[in-house]
Image 1 (spheres, rainbow, N blue to C red):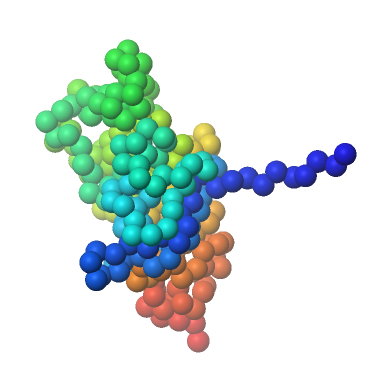
Image 2: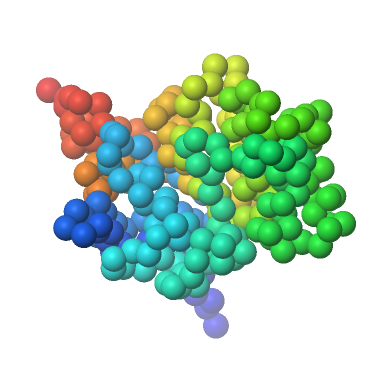
Length: 248
């Protein structure tokens, strides 16, 4: 008997997602997905709704309508903490470490509270993640003393400590030198190589295109185009909304 080919299910999917704050509507029927192990980039002008979409995916607030699924599981009604436990982690555009704690303590707390690890497992996990993110030498430094690159690395390290299957990266390239950006790109590529699904919002397009295989462009709370990065960036609506011009 002939076996039917299996169709992979998206690791993360938003279907018909709308978000309003009173009379102000900020997301309009957003349909978005990321496949297992895929790296997807999200671009768009300021105010496009990119970070609002991340907040909706991560559970920072309830959506007005629509649904969000992680590995086929409906996340409706689940909190951000519950989604984290299920494997969905995010970083923030402005890093949010616990400034009164050391670098190690920041990652250790994430492993304990975000992934529910016991003390010994969290200690080993934190040390390994600090090694991977080039922060091990700074383990005993106060988070408040870190420069921008190391704060961004710590933001990623804290997310990794929750053992995510999907990581949402919000503008982590901003403010970095080219060398620092290269180090961050290497880290993100290594995460994808390990099978993690990466969704990355970034204004630094050349950095994004070194990692992602699919691009989504948003404007005014809507998705204008998604697909192959070259095709998306050549789309007339994307040219007008994102680049401020359109091809002749």
